[in-house]
Length: 457
Image 1 (cartoon, one colour):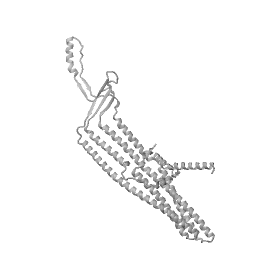
Image 2: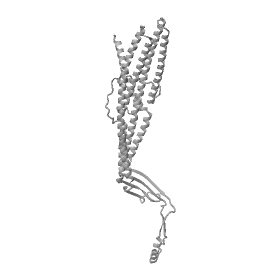
Image 3: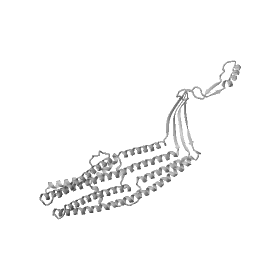
Image 4: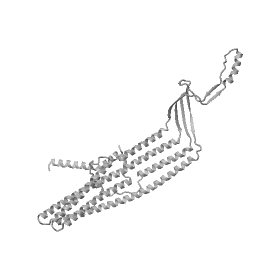
């Protein structure tokens, strides 16, 4: 072997290794693509963004609130107050005029002053500062838990989507394998047909041998057509989950089938990372915060305020109309007809209900984990039994074909052996699919797939 040949072989091996490595990452890449492009996840992400904005709004309530207010009024009529200034002063003024022999003190009229101010304005900047308000704090904590709840909802859908993508991809792999099986069966039957035609041509068999062989070829062609249809449907559904054109070509990750060589061994403890449980825990914390919020009616609310502006008759802004006003406000609810106590009791009932719901969910998930694991083990055992069946039927077909070519076996035996071999290979392919699906379901139930490794960009 010369040096050039060795280099070519080395390059081919390197390319094959890179090709294998690329396909080993195919499924993970598809999962990431599905998580990035799924429209339902994007919709739920909008809800999460809104929840985060709600938290920002709750935090904003702790800061001073400033507002600018201006009011100018014109009035005529309405209620009035009579001020008897003339009755009070005119007699005094008359006496003073007589004593001074002058008219320095004129007579005045009684005044009628209306309550509604005319040509009056009040323009000010008002600042309010919450100094002590427990409701603001508990409201912020509730909004924080709502974000956690929304995040768990998004992660829950992501985990379901990952499971669906995996199972759809496994179905696609099985459809490819089924195509290969029927194509091999068709090639085998065509070879048997050629051999039968040769026997008839040499007068070593009658024409019915050829007819039976052709019937077998037609039967396998029908099965191959159905397998092709299943293959196209599996590819279309997989592309649908990835939100890409249904006719998009799909990579074949053969490394996945090698993972079936080792059986999964898991402990049947309830996974605390299940999004459903974490969501219930978050809801419980939110309800506990809501209980404290309802209990805060016993505490006072203290706030401060400060006003600066201009106030007076005529729309003027001068030193005479400038004013400042500041102070503290205390609000303390004393009695509300036991409404607050009833709200507290309702919150306590809600907490008891969510605790009961959590306990029920734990039991339900534990049952789900046990049954899914048992189904996985049964599928894994059935797969190995199917593999043994494939080995046996292949050997039976090999022996039947050898005896048939030597004229020691009937054509019916050969056809039956080939049919059993094909059926065994299909059953083994379906058994592999069942193991992959059960493993994916077990991964979903036990929450072992790390969603955080596939954050949407």
